[in-house]
Each structure stands twice: as structure tokens, then as C-alpha cells.
Image (cartoon, rainbow, N blue to C red):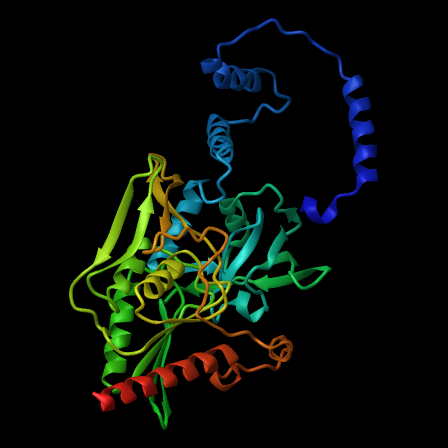
Length: 409
């Protein structure tokens, strides 16, 4: 990345070399003029007739022109996807693909890990939210688009990919080799009941909104926990990089009724309001949303709706800050364009772009816990998870307050 490798002396030398090289090239004046509307075709014509390599195809130039056009919009989430990449994306929405198991996005103009998917090679290799991806298999990501990066990281099961990573709290860039594997994106990863003297706390870990069955999976999980007579519920959205807007709205409807979940605003400043009605699965009990810096997009929509509607308490650390909505345009050759068409606002009209959702109760992970988790022999357990334990403590307090209120009545 330029910001990591800038060197004034090297740039000066390269500038001199570049000048000498240009000075030695014969200059052939061209008198051809073209109207602005014909510029693209004119350049394409010169490439086809004069470029040193003859094997340039029309499709290659067409794809390149589309990528350049979209890149000029300066929006990291608007991008072109070739047919292979689009097929992979559709597989991901169905719930299975080959890769290492990370969701990536742009953080301060750099390609970054939004979150590793739990249980995947990426998580096992120690990748973390906000890790910057410097290169993939030796190819620098500076100036590389999201889809191109994803295509490089994806590959056949069992094959290695080498990433160079810059971590926020470290000066040195380090390499990590990860073997690709089958990635299954089941939405609900875990469900538990924590029994305490104050009451029974239900727990659901929701890992993605990409799976088209995410709302149904959450509905079933809540029904299962209801049968166990829970007094409060924790929904763990940590490292959930988001997914489908409809899932965020649908899952919001499992906890709230007759409220606004999200506003979307288009290019003409027209605002659409997405609300929910009907009978929620979990309408009144204490609700805790557990989030961190890897909670993005649809996760932030759900957490923002819970917060603004005073339905529950947000515990953890501030979220990633992705507040844009993309439309998938399926092209005739089975390639596609992901086009940002709206940004979203929380029910209170707050734009969280690059700011994220602010938590109600801060819960940090101590340095000692982080260092212990980085050791090869570390085994995760609920008791070792300080953020989860904080969420449980908040839930138990809410149970106590609820029972006290009922007694006073």
C-alpha cells in the first residue's frame, strides 16, 4: 500500500528514470480528432490496431471499460463482477462456497477484513476485524477492487493462499498462509441457555445475513429457546459482516412490532421507510445485542433499530460503519454490477457511515485475553469471553429489574 511504502528518494529516482524513458520514445504526432462521445470507441480502435499485443479481445476491453467507469465513481461497494465471480456470489447466498471464510470491505480507503466467519480457516489463522490486506499471493491490493480481491482469495479446496496483513496495533506487516476449504454460511451458529440464580438467559449467535434462510433460522432458534423458558435473550452479532437487507428487516420483525426498522435514501433524497408489523417471536423480554468492530451493514441495521426503538441494550464495541445499499444488476453474459443505489439511516435518521453504532454498555477484551487467544493451544469457552460475560451480566440485571417491577405492581 502506498501509505505503508512511500519513499521520497525512490519516487524521485523513478521520476527521473521515467522522464529519461519518455524522452527516448519517438513521438508520432496524430491529427485525428474525436468527439467526446466517440472517445471510448476511438481509443478501443487504436488498441485493436496498434497495441503491441494482438491477443486483446473485445470482451477484455469491454470488462475493463466497465470497471474503469465504476471505479471513477469512487465508491468501493459499487463494482463489476465477471461471470465466474457472480456464480461464486450466488453460491455464497445459497450457503456454501470455497474460500478461507472472511468478509472484506473498505476501511479508511484500504481493503480490510470486516470479520472472519466463525469456525473457518480465516478465523483459525487468527485474522481479525480491521486487519488491512496488503497483498494476496504477492499481488498488492493497493488500487484493487473488492471483487478482484475476493476472486484472488477464492480457489479450489485444499489450495493455499498467502495474505500480507497490516494489523492496527502492530508496525510490521506479516504473512499468513491459509488453506482454502468449504465455507458453509449457516446463519445461526450457536444457541444456548445460561442458567443463573437470577434467571435463564438465552443466547443466539447470528453469523451472517447473507444466507437466504437467515430469518427462518432465527425464528426457529427463538422458538427453541422459548421452550426452555428463557427470561432474557442475547443476540451475538460480533463479526457479522451483514448481508441481505430483507433479512435485517425480517429479523427485526421477530423482536419488534409496528416500528421503523430502517430508512433508505436515494440519489434524489427520496426517503423510504421500512417498518414491521405482525406478531413478533420475542416481543417483550429483555433483549441484548452484542456487537463489535466486525458488525457491519445488516448487523448495524438490526442493532440500530433495536437501539432507536428502545427495544434492547447494545453491548460491546462500536460497529464497523457501512451504511450503503447495493442493487445487483444481472447482465446478459451472466456477469453483474453491484451498484450502490441508496444509503440507509437508523430509525432516528442517523447516518452511521464510518462511525458505526455507539454501544450502550462498553465491553472491551483485555490484552491478556487477546494474547491468550493468539496461542495455538487456545480453546474458546463462554467463560473466557469477557464481552459475552458482560452481556450476560447486563441481561441478568434486566431480569432482576423486570421481576422487581412486577412485584411492585
